[in-house]
Length: 185
Image (spheres, rainbow, N blue to C red):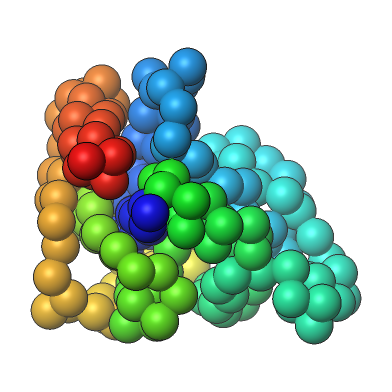
């Protein structure tokens, strides 16, 4: 039996983490769908559920093989825990916010990969990035200007996050439920 890795991708400020948090809460009590906590070399803060680690701790964990997938973006290191491979191999659905730059690597790790892309108009993105307070306006503008590293990568679900969080989450909940149910057949 093989499950699925669902990569949630999109530019900074598109609302991926907010949608995923809302979706995780909506799916509480539903078995077979796992949202692993990423390790990131950033201090804890509002807006993103992650396990904060230092660069040295991250490097040590990577050397031990603690991650299924790692990447670097925006001066930070990101890691998805290795146990997600076992979850997917046993038929579960793993849902993770990943860099668009790692999409090509996923099929070498998981038998089934699906991609959910979150988009939003640039003005809304810029306002959200500034509002979260991690960067000044120049750094926020640089994030908005970043070139999409996988503009032509096929997607299985497109969420335009310019409405309510409830509507965006409902689309993801419906998609994940279909993916989980298809894996069980």
